[in-house]
Length: 493
Image (cartoon, rainbow, N blue to C red; front, side, top):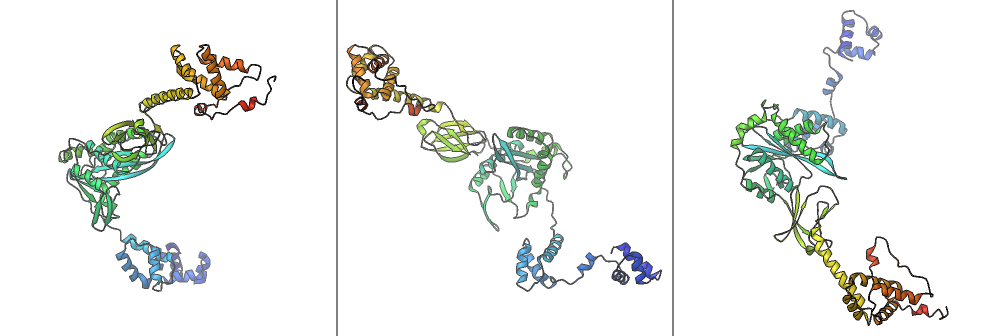
């Protein structure tokens, strides 16, 4: 029954003097509704009437108030659990409705606090989802710092929120502001605070070292009190709704370039909603109050111990970076900025690479392997020579003969050893001694002698080559005595 129905029923009954049955028939109402309207001197909706109705929750409201006084954010489930122990027989839905009304009436009023020029800045992170880097996606974040007096903003998009990135973003912000605020206000970030219990705070030691270098005070919001850094919270929302939404970015580099253009050309020259002035204009009054920058920036590089692999690589951030072969399988130190990766052995720089943000790539410097390749070739050359000399008597004299004839030793030795794999050591050695009698030096002579010896006995044997597997083609196999097969045939055959 709405207020119009209530008013009309009362008019028909008290002014027109119609009966309740007649009113119910005319207005298509139930007679109970007509009776209730007549008896109701002031209109009250069902919702308002229900407020005055007795509830099973009434005798437990004092207990709930005491719980909420101690634990303001206590959930409805926990309160329901406690009052059930004291005899509450109603449903949790009634409790939830009551808590919603109580908590709405207890919303806290905030006092805006303005700071002096150069006195304070506020910092926060904005989680921006993910971005495609090459074939893979990475988490995208945005660091935001706002000067509390002028509302001048600095922002920087990053691919991590690790401590070293956080510190580097501060350094970049100080450069942007051309000075350092006396105090910086933070939420309870893990990069700033390791442990907080009541008023007891344990700061991150490396962050403390950075803070001491720039001599600013780190101030923390109270737990669950993000409104205390409302200036940066407002800045974060402004970035989210006025920069990120509705824009297309071709790459991470394009995103960073667009963000800086927007920061300088839009965000810091707009009329601010609170101060009603442009941040750049108020900054002119603030910049001289900021503390001076030190002569040298703090070293914010990622510094980690790294063990190189046997294939001369050091792994970092899902990628592998090469080191000179002399430092394979050694304990090294890796230092990384947002643009480069450098690797040290003790304090000696041994490798320097451009940093990549793709994944599972191998970044190599060809100079790291040149000497190793040369050494491997030289070692292979001597290995082949020793293998040739090991065939038996006559090989050393034959080698000297090839040297005197100024032949390409590596080429001819490799050819002769290849014949060993095809025809066997015994036959090749016989051919070498036969060639030695006639002073015929070179792999072609050896091959001709073997073929002449085998002519008429069997077909030419072709070598087996495994495609794409030079390692197997160059492998040595155990020599077998092939006379066993020759004995199967008679001289005539």
